[in-house]
Image (tube, rainbow, N blue to C red; front, side):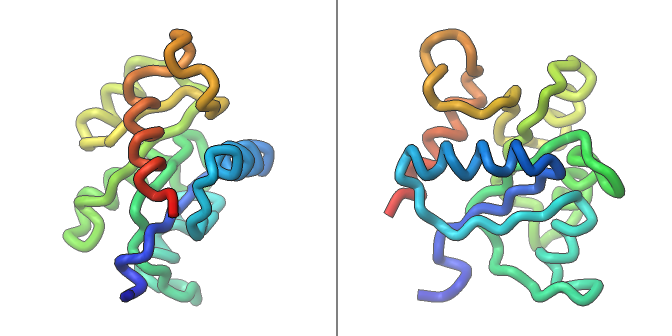
Length: 146
């Protein structure tokens, strides 16, 4: 099996509590795939491209991305990924505390796969707490189960 065919997740998040919440939710759902963590968009690009002293990671199955981060925010990273032929087709889900229509519109213009309002929890599906976008993330994550 080539590294590209092994399911994996790239989590781009600067808040350590949110990182731990995502890891906990994945474990609770028995989704045990390699998870690479980047603290901002610049670090994520460096990992994906193998630049600035970072070892290049295999292309992830999906990217979970915060909007509000230092150095390069989530929407800037999403724009860079969509402009790069190697990563234009990446399955990217934005996770944010922002429910601003302007953020959602920008994300949709950049062909985001889904937009999830944090905190991420799969217990709220069907209770109105999580959007259809969140449900599509859940379905994509289920496909990563081993």
